[in-house]
Image (cartoon, rainbow, N blue to C red; front, side, top):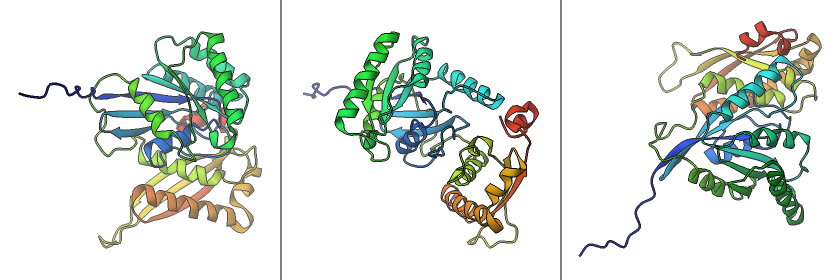
Length: 313
């Protein structure tokens, strides 16, 4: 007789989940931890993400496509307005929304502003993800979990889950993937096995350069800094076993006075940016790279529709 006691295999699931939250809530770090490699730039400067980056998590039972969004914020520029529009259009298209709230900061007006918008989205399941738990003790974490539960009750949000996680400490990262996957619809894989992102290589290279340029700069610079990769071409006349990719990129800032900050004394800072970025780009592309960087002024580009289009926004 055949054994009929075995439980049927769980159906394969696939779909999109997005992480939302105010700037610097740990969304990009969590995306990278779940995918297992860097697909989104991270920085301790708020508002570093400017594109929705899709990171793809492959599992035997599911394919989870993560959409990392810019932090929703009160915009002061046309760029800020466009980034907020990008977040809202992403919310409308995903299967699950993960609301990231840092454990080390009390719920503030920014969190409540986002939660009110989430309350208007009735059908999409919402998971509250308490990030950066490695920065707090158990008492503070418990207080934050209770506060998030109360926030949901006040606004009529029924959290599908509330889960604490530390992407840096790799605590409960796989559990986040489990919980998000359970909420996806049944379906076939959306991307080929082995793909980790659908972000174009030129965009990812530009983001890695911008991440390197953001390290250790003054507060006003992150918002003013944009990177455009003008050209990525294999060097001609190289032997097959010693390829070299030439990458030419421009780093744009808004004012002439910012140029000296990016370049540094005798070009030292720009050289450091190039060295740091090149290592990450070579790891991403799997080939040696020659990186040529130039710093250019695009006056008040964040407020100029023509300049924004030129810079890819």
